[in-house]
Length: 187
Ligand code: S3P
Image (cartoon, rainbow, N blue to C red; front, side, top):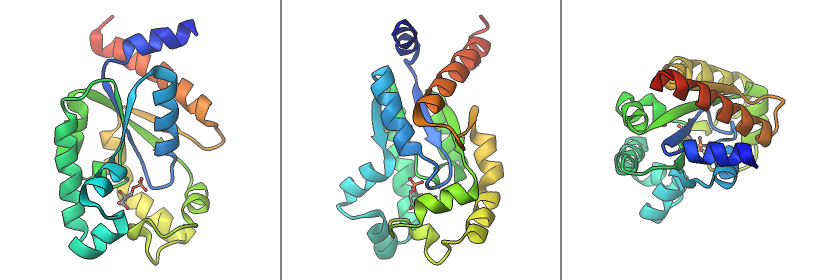
């Protein structure tokens, strides 16, 4: 409990969770928000609510570029937030301007998992247009590899989630945040 109070005090910045589809960003965001009393913004959900359409419908009706613009627009608005966990759509760090925005008032945390784990999580449901016709381990591994460099470049912290439960992931994240904060603040 004491530890959690300490963490809560220190989380006066935003945490942007990035990573491939199905890596567990939403689950980790919900847990972080409960543990540390932070607000949560689910980017996909916020955009879908504004547009009054599901993400696949937005892609279908207006195209991917329109969706990417909505992501950038939303991030601009979130620059004013504090103590907020932002659960980013998997494509958000692909634009450098988005990464700059996330870093302005927060830390960027990359969650990773193996292609097999990702596949098992995304195989049900048709809510991810980018994976249409690509729901197999080979295609997922290839897309992950295409994005890897940009994900890693954006990240202040990387957490491999394979074999860990959500509480372990949150505890690891809190520890890593504390140590990079110390480095950043020179204490
Ligand atoms: C996308 C990831 C999705 C959603 C959209 C595009 C991507 O979010 O933003 O379907 O390009 O990786 P999740 O990562 O939450 O699935």
